[in-house]
Image 1 (tube, rainbow, N blue to C red):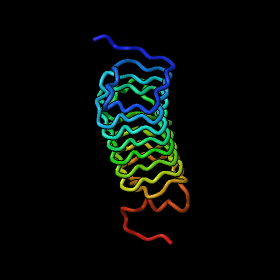
Image 2 (image 1 turned 180 degrees about the horizontal axis):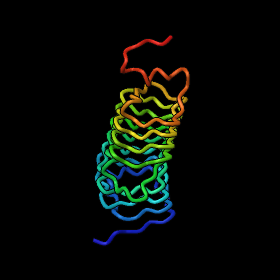
Image 3 (image 1 turned 180 degrees about the vertical axis):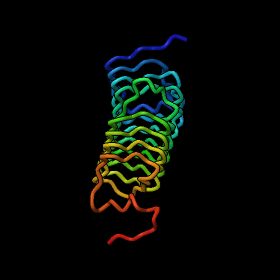
Length: 190
């Protein structure tokens, strides 16, 4: 089956679960108020694409390529980003819901998470060095053998990071939230 190529296209208010999305390469495209809920995006490549107010919850993204993908005000609940094509994988998330998603073992250095809900997100074995978590809620997020060197958590809340099993050299934390590094010791800081 021949894959389609779309360049500089604007897709607005499309429910792709009802109108079948065409597998192919989407370059410099914008998706506005679109729903991809629960569909399969295997064989899709999104290069320098922007998703605004889209719902991709529970979408299957096995082998999907996201190269310089920007997500703004999107719902991305339950996505298995660890199943994406890792080649040139790069994201930016702003005001997104990423609850219950997985970034297991991904190398996504310098990723920006801005004002995102990251409840119970799995960052196990991920390389997030240089990433910025600006004003994010990390309730229940899993950091296990995660590279967080030079990451910025200064304005984020509800994280629990064990410095003994994660790499946190030169990471930034605020005085108000530094307790998130001491949770395993069951102590109180006032």
